[in-house]
Image 1 (cartoon, protein in one colour):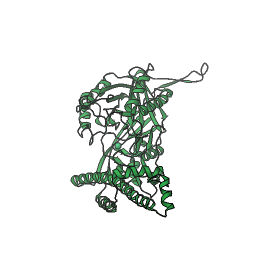
Image 2 (tube, protein in one colour):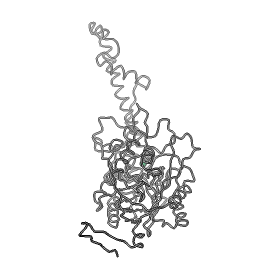
Image 3 (cartoon, rainbow, N blue to C red):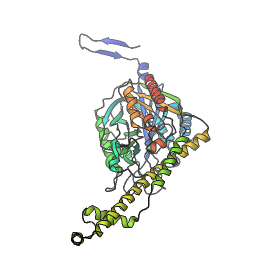
Image 4 (cartoon, rainbow, N blue to C red):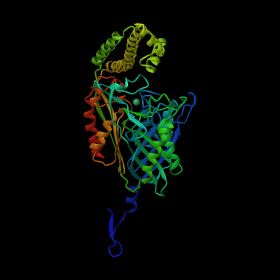
Length: 502
Ligand SMILES: [Zn+2]
């Protein structure tokens, strides 16, 4: 053990002296690297996508924190279901890092990455492991609430729907309230003992799907944010974005049709807010490094009844469509005319006055008929919009129900990680947790600086709250979900248990 030397007469502090062996044991070392994974053959490229790796060790435990600018770790997009196992196997064989200690998070941006992304990931981890140096770490919390919104809309009739490009929004008057966001940016700063920054790991919850004008390949807002951080800390800093509980969080102005949507505007704000927090962090020699990795079985949903109900709803909607004399070509000019002049829409006012003087009301009758037809036509459009939402949801429900039947298993195993580096505590889940779940876990945690990552070590689609799953309003994440509502309580209890071990 160490000795305390109290130099009471000269100084009023206690000096701690470690032996050389103890010093080595109590020291963290780390290395970072980033490798370009952009598929340059897949069309125009706006900005590059990367895999970034931070390898960190206390001499006994070694962990790799890896972030990928890609939509998911398996299931959807370019990264296949063999990726995680391949990367871990190779890293264990060549570097001796335990598979359970390799954590890979997808930013969930929709970039197109190279098909050899597994080899490139191993390269990034190997490069990071090859240049490990003694480090100090520190944790901080940033704030950003300008770039995102909750995409679930609470409707006046009690249902919930979500904001997507895949279908239309309901009429404004149907929307009663919106859901929460989580403005926290969890920041881990890793500095060399000389004081240069090596890595900024930052956790935040928002779908990085704003895109860039022209639609070229992009790592989206979180790619831009990482670039801003890397360009404004020490040379060689690697900024690793760890996606949080973004299941129901969209970029702000996601449905804007009046201005070109650009991920850079939002990403720069996120980068600057992260920098603000990162610069305030004081690193310390605290060498705590812990990794907990557990598998939790969660109940799968049987979606058969939901499909029957939704098909019945679609049938009802289809049957409610009524014929009108109008088509799109005749409807649109009428709408303009009837909005421009409430009282005299069909012709100049003098003609109405002339008719009135002669005791005729032909124009008035025409207006009554047109207004009735326009109202019907608008009702039909709203019904059509609802059908587009129902169709999208039925397709997703059918896909997941077929998987359930094929798989024949009522439970699904998920891998959960708890990671502690200094006072930075992170717990992960392999799906799209909605934001309230992250807030619940943070609030229940015994650690002040607890952050939650979805999209990690696998992908099991959306993971909405039990309440959200009970909704019958066709929010897409409720249909793009394989979990039964009971999953939430089971998972939150397990997450608390894992946090307790850190
Ligand atoms: Zn998503």
